[in-house]
Image (tube, rainbow over all chains, first blue to last red; front, side, top):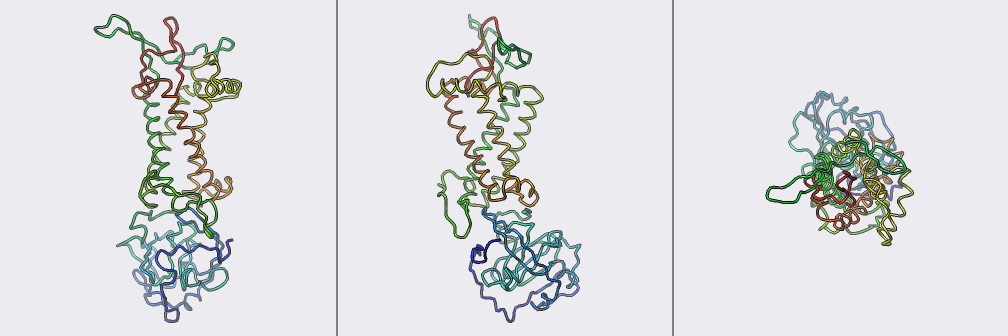
Length: 171
Length: 255
């Protein structure tokens, strides 16, 4: 495992988009029976999963980190999501955005991550909530999440994907 | 194809191009020609050549995104890749070029290897242990200008070694590339290569192997004449140097 101070920061804009951590919520909408703003404490009440997994960057480097959070599938169950929908789209505090296919979202190692290396996520690593997707290339693991939509329609695929990177990019 | 005597000491199966003699209209003297490279070989040769150029140039553009084999933090760049030798413009573009020509390269290589095996032509170019004693005399001939060893087989041992090595480099490129492409799905292969970062090194070394082969290959083609080059374009070689009137002869040197 790579020490936290040597875990790379490849934020494409800023290391800190200035999220107000006290008032932060995750807006969940789309094909869900309980849409709304989910607080971090409510998300933290879901079963905690801790995993040491490899993060592979499209640039060619890789690091292993220790990540903890809840399974995306757990939040989808909490929100009553229709998991027959094809996609999840994510918005972020900066203007980054991402989307996932439903099978990837339901993978047991696909996390909504709030702890890293045993402590709450630091701002530069995506506080308060980010994606950790060990089955996907690094840029899919978006930071500073603010919204999650369950949908059958992709208006846009992802910040990098819409510029030419692979959307699926399973590892 | 037919069996032929490749050595006075030992008769082995090999293939050799058929030499024909014909009289062009308006010409008093007959012309001899041999069909050296079947269509499949010519197509796969040039598709592979184009693929390797694109894969190398786009691969260098990809490497430019993180030009190091060390850690990301701190990052120590190994080299600065000159934009003039790259394809794709940026990482995203280069990846698309690389992943497209990856399939062309794999498919072409599979057709080539399959054809060589089915046709039996692999016997002409596959380097085997019995070729080992002949390597050093050819090295002395090419690099130290000593006398040319007697021609006993379609391709000399050094040629066989070079061609066989390129096939192995191709296989190594594909296997290491698969690990870089899908390190989780090919985690067993990644483990065998010492992990994802090491696979990146092996992948780059395979490219260096191809780059090392190229100058020698081009120089030999140039030294052995235009008609070798033409033969890889149209298949036929006019006035093959290896044939005499009473024997169809063996495959040519060079390339």
